[in-house]
Image 1 (cartoon, rainbow, N blue to C red):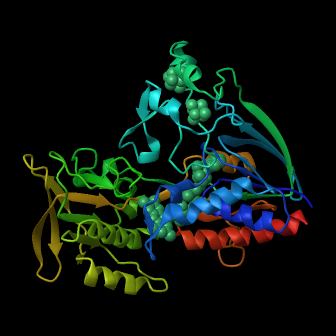
Image 2: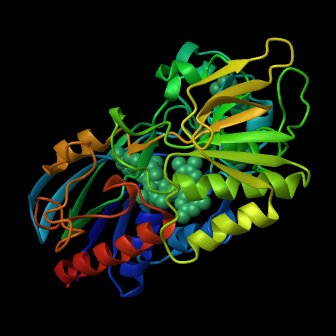
Length: 428
Ligand SMILES: Cc1cc2nc3c(=O)[nH]c(=O)nc-3n(C[C@H](O)[C@H](O)[C@H](O)COP(=O)(O)OP(=O)(O)OC[C@H]3O[C@@H](n4cnc5c(N)ncnc54)[C@H](O)[C@@H]3O)c2cc1C
Ligand code: SF4
Ligand code: SF4
């Protein structure tokens, strides 16, 4: 039996790896971050069941890492490909973590003591992390990584504190990047999504008003493991909000920006409003929508439950502008009431913008390295949307998850299992 390579260790990549490994196929799972898990590891709860996201994903992450048929190559990237279906030769760069993974116990002492604070991309830049870090508490593998862009020892030959305090002797400032060559029969691309930054939608004030956030920032704010330990706080005095507005399609379905529907945001905003009300049961939410796309099994009922049990009001309008009250930092939303044909105002303490799901930043580079095509929006192209939904334009290379188009976790997992079944045909 031949090996299979999976690129991207989000829920789609993990599912494909487990399906293949369980049938006896050996898998390499290449993930560019120091931990597998992808976006799902950073979500609070998941719609439409409102289950804890990491509680569902963490067992799969651990099973994947400890599976005898899976080699996880984290902090790694694919940089070269030769050959053809059934016999690909792949070059992978494994970046130095400057920590000996066989010795690190993940105790975290180095992270407490490291003096260098840097913007924390895993909390949507809402707080800081250290130069030596774990991306999030449930990271797999639970091994420290030194960020060589910021570490004082690696950039200025100063500090060296982590080496002195690590009782396990795990710090190794001399570690070098490694190039690994693999021979695989098939490849599954599962590099996931990135999100549009809505600064150019000036009318909504993102980046100008303290209490306007994106939906990804909200996921971290409402999460007990996030920067505010799950408490919603408003500027300027840290008070908790009593009224929140969620604005849909902020850049999605917009011919000037991202013409596609991001597919999950309507349901995610309902989930987010429910969670806010679960935290503070007098809290009211307003969801401004163009079309409420609650199209799947039990989704419509979910939206109705939000209205009935969680103080959600749906408003069919695309707000024209948001203004900030300079004293209270409250936000005044201007929108047209369709029924009355009037411009109305709604004052809230926090606004959450549902921004478009885009292809992961690295998708074009990966596509070029692999010699596969992307579509007009930059997502990985399939040969035929209806008949061959997991086949890319190169035989032997398959696709799964949000790098193909925006989709929810269930659809990502389904596509991952389909891609694994196709890859298995080549692995034998
Ligand atoms: C704010 C928000 C809330 C959401 N809430 C829900 C919800 O409640 N319920 C639901 O069903 N769905 C939700 N979704 C959608 C859900 O996040 C996606 O369906 C799911 O994460 C897709 O999984 P994936 O594996 O395709 O991509 P990702 O989760 O993005 O994982 C891709 C992985 O590939 C890695 N990667 C990227 N580039 C490379 C590279 N070049 N080489 C190697 N690795 C690479 C990434 O680091 C990442 O680990 C939400 C999405 C957002 C943005
Ligand atoms: S590097 Fe050392 S101090 Fe840091 S987490 Fe690992 S074992 Fe603990
Ligand atoms: S050597 Fe680098 S990672 Fe270690 S404590 Fe100093 S700044 Fe932090």
